[in-house]
Length: 102
Image (cartoon, rainbow, N blue to C red; front, side):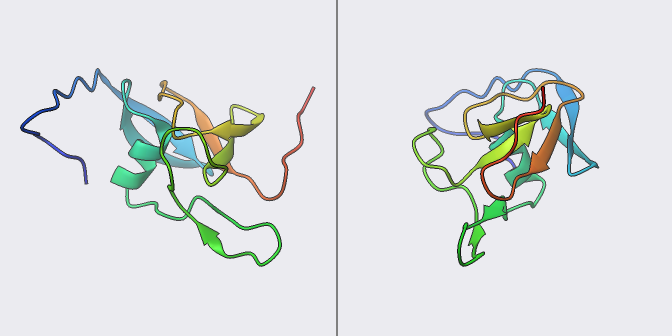
């Protein structure tokens, strides 16, 4: 669910794009973050804690915590709450620290 109107904020979503979360197509907009697109698509669980494997979701939404770290286009440890969507992006859930592919 996306907010359509707001009394103070003006939403400029840009054009509609498609991103892929764990191989599943998700509708998104260019000017929204990956986390916002996933949240709008009903995806609330973004990962899990390291030791106890408890579910993690959006926490701060400003890039200060590590709750939204995912692998984006093979780049691990990407904070999806501050990265904007691009058409064709591949976003994968990350377990642990993530491994950089070179």
